[in-house]
Length: 89
Image (tube, rainbow, N blue to C red; front, side, top):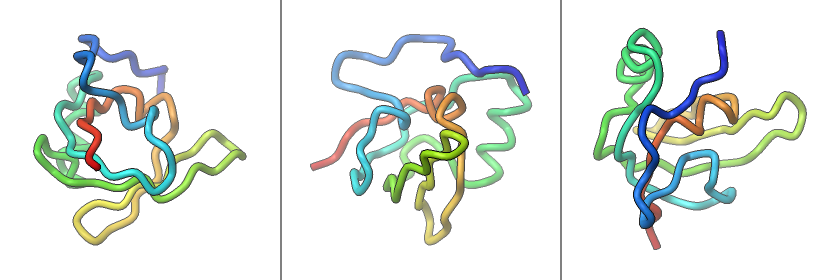
């Protein structure tokens, strides 16, 4: 899969999933990238408005582990950069 690039820059108050620190919670705002990729993420539960938490960063392979809807899913950092989020306190 080629590197995913967000189609629109997030607002100043927003960030991407790749910007979060381990343990941080956020609300998903938008999913950017090719249509097939967006559809697959929607199928996995990455829908706008969904609450999620970054569980950890795995140094080997540049992977993030994300918890949403009682499931843990691993994404590459370049894939996570296409997910716009709003950081929560």
